Length: 306
Image 1 (tube, rainbow, N blue to C red):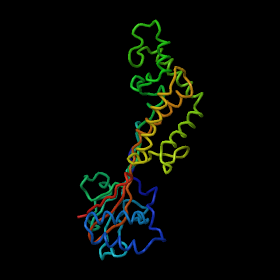
Image 2: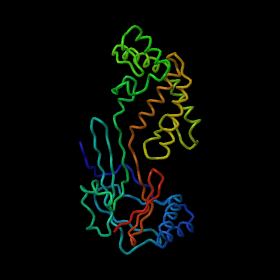
Image 3: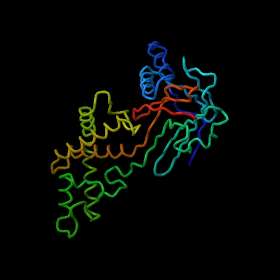
Image 4: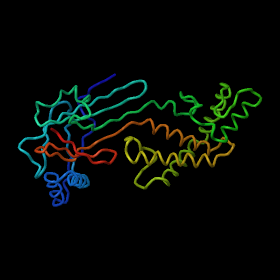
């Protein structure tokens, strides 16, 4: 199901009142008169000082953008924002794109904004979504032979015990015997449920030891809401480290260490299923047709509107 919504669920923050005016004015002048590198540095300064372009709540209708201070121009830059949500059995995606033009009449129709070519004067403000995570759980929809569970000594031991005396039951990977597969997965799930609370707490503790203090983890935190962000990359890397460390600590017992390993492995699978990016407009220079913006990958960019 595809729906084009007329409103935004978020509003980009307006410029804070308190700011070092001299530094802001110098950065705005650099945006107006500087070369590409100078402008990029100026955008970075404006970003750090909290300058943002405010986007109207109502989507689809054209709106005018004027530059602040020395970037003020007799003719504004025109923009149109469109947002769409796509839902399906395999996941969900949300996109919000803003298109720009020097003249209101040159803006594309609302229904075309989301499908503009990559070289069009437009910015992807937000893209978020997820693929189904049903295959991440133990015994989920994914084939267990693709998950590498047998790498853990406790799981390997359980498979060997079940396959004892059964021909062609156990090879180098997961068992091909359905009964042994289900029996082992059930035992893993029981261990996970038994030690779920302690495993979750230990995972949070070890992630905090691995991550910088600014990267929060734990209840209510979603490190990979923006999957292209450096924060998400650091989170996934630390999940891998915790998982590898837990696997090295593993014994032949289906215990709390196994539960921790499963929690880290499942967490990494869920993080990989996320799809999200966002960009924020910093400032516009209508006379030059330029838009400075910063994205969730922490890269500052400039759009040139013809």
